[in-house]
Image 1 (cartoon, protein in one colour):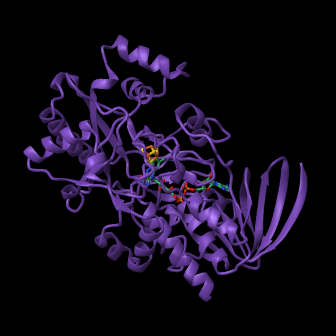
Image 2 (tube, rainbow, N blue to C red):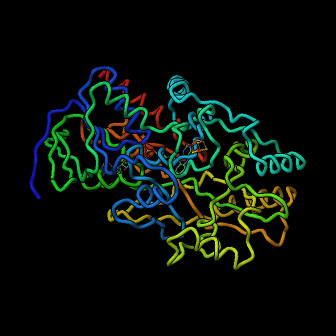
Image 3 (cartoon, helix red, strand yellow):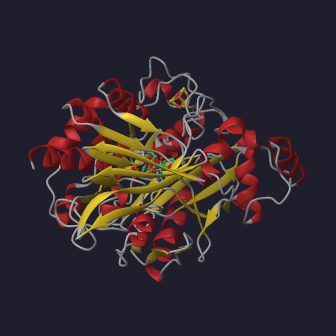
Length: 446
Ligand SMILES: Cc1cc2nc3c(=O)[nH]c(=O)nc-3n(C[C@H](O)[C@H](O)[C@H](O)COP(=O)(O)OP(=O)(O)OC[C@H]3O[C@@H](n4cnc5c(N)ncnc54)[C@H](O)[C@@H]3O)c2cc1C
Ligand code: SF4
């Protein structure tokens, strides 16, 4: 592989998820010379079969599961996991921000405006979700409409947000990236940053590889936004050993049940949520339903060995007497404990604690009761594997980076979910982008 030098940039931003995209855009809008380096490609196709492998598996082509049996989803493509996000744009609880000692009110309001956040319109809530909402209400629980970063005039309600959006109705961080590019930012795709180059305690650039080449790219300001699973690996390779500890994931589990008359396939999921359980119980329950392939995984406890086609999943479900068209389901994310770790080889240690298990059990009981009240037959209720899609806290403020998100290497900053001092227990994109706006302000002023 040939070595190429590239530079000089005022800032290099590593990763294009909500964290990287928000900081790159702010810097580019104010005329700074920015290079964005992204591991993955730009996807222009959407849908399960076209997106799932490319977005979720990355170049190593393997799903990620922790040693404690928690499946971890993330997308390594332009836009990061926002490409596959469900369009939920939930603000962080004020209590958590107080805990963090960070005032993000201004930045959150700006992000909400950028993303055109709106409440899920009542008339777009599907029949399965409506049935669950009514059942919850009979039990004294009020389901609230979810704030969404979706332009509902363009949304065709296909429920495929998890595999990209065919109409562009859903906000993803590609919007910020494209704006940054319009204002002069450069983008290097399919390129993996391996480590940060530094001399005398100061950042001087990054070493990267991709497109058949090795790169050394010069800059004295580096912002790592590779996500909470990859940022700590780059930090470790750059000599910052304590990165990667204290991982939390907002672990979740789905409870399914079969009805005689209706299901949720093809409707917008996570359209409503149970707000009352967030504050005291740290639970985020919401109506949620998977495609058959994933239901098959949840029945069998892992990915099916030879199931490469959706048809196989449907056949297996039919053989077990399961009709995916008559399944209703709810998931609950929990605010889990910071006991995980991203190891130097990229594997993940995450074993649920007793407290995590108790929260998931409480969530299961609530979901079960609501589903049965909504018409699910009690003997058909089953639960999914443990899952997560919100890794965070692996380079936390006050631990690996300072209040201004700078590491012990001068000029090396982190801006993604890694810097959370504790998990939110609910969708984090707004908060990640807000932290990046805050960092950009600091960099522009400094
Ligand atoms: C299926 C799913 C649904 C979700 N739905 C929602 C939702 O509705 N609302 C919400 O708020 N949150 C949602 N989330 C969570 C949210 O998407 C993530 O928390 C968020 O995208 C994390 O942002 P980030 O900037 O920290 O990192 P990421 O989004 O992970 O971005 C990191 C980027 O860095 C790149 N990268 C990694 N390593 C390197 C490297 N070495 N060199 C260069 N580039 C690198 C990656 O390819 C990626 O593009 C969802 C997550 C998943 C998986
Ligand atoms: S439900 Fe709407 S926002 Fe989601 S993928 Fe379909 S069109 Fe896009």
